[in-house]
Image (cartoon, rainbow, N blue to C red; front, side, top):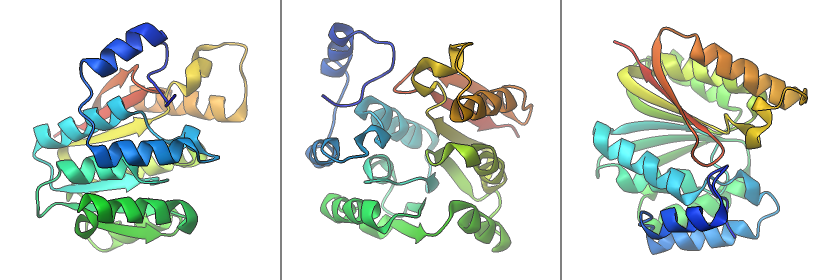
Length: 221
């Protein structure tokens, strides 16, 4: 069984998948391989990947930023949705995990669209800003270490253009953010981050109960 949208019963979830998911075979293969990985819980759900691909197409995005690659399911989804001249800048620190991603990028025919930076993401983001790339990205996806979410968000907001979109994963944290008895450090960090984004008048937002919670933040003009 693969990761599914939080809160949906199995019967209803299977109905949603059967009546909406159009997953290319290469993505199915990647998802199944990752399901056997010790950190399989880090992979996004297939319906989330499909939603992000739809958003890329809807926006006509050509330049995308990903913070947190893991085995490459989300980056492959997004890269497949980009036009032939599209560009994805991917940030991760694991050579081991991203070796799987590289293999699937090649198999999917999207490797030429993707530039992987193996370094702490904040270093890469600051480098991009230092190179004058502020407001040149159309879309950013944040799915990395939760302790740096606020900093990733602030950098991404500088890097995307007005009218660009930031998608942030795991904002429901398996429902723990809504449990008043849960004061785990990461839970509290995500709660504080959600409040920060909810109060940020630089963006228009929607928190979607898809997968483990996905916030969409549209940068206002």
